[in-house]
Image (cartoon, rainbow, N blue to C red; front, side):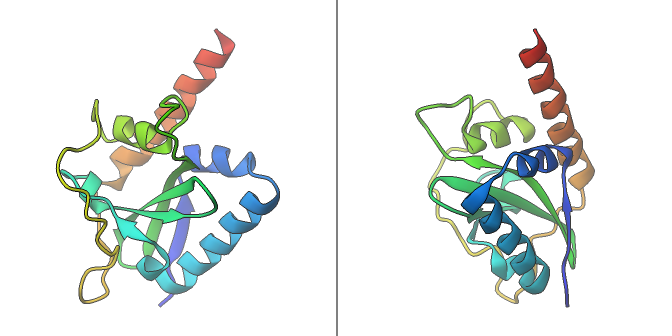
Length: 148
């Protein structure tokens, strides 16, 4: 079964900024996500809800992409960007924690389980509208900071 792939407003803006090898890696990833669903992703994040329903793929170098599944065969690319703990203002995970309503990363052991459940099913997040709205709000916030 093919997976529909949607991009949040934030992911659209981030994808528009990609060039060269990063753009090619992202396009290839989207094709793989459409073809294989959750099997195209590297791992699921650990932590409290909704973090434990989000999956990550390493694209190139430090570049990461974060995906949520609204339901069977329907995915959302929420955001992408570099993972850089030295620069929290541009770190994809720092942005993700904010979108998830967290002030800090989830505590506890990070085990990086497979994105798909044992039976090959996606970790569904029917509440996707809230996360995509927060991603949209993050774009607006970044625009105001640049303008101000």
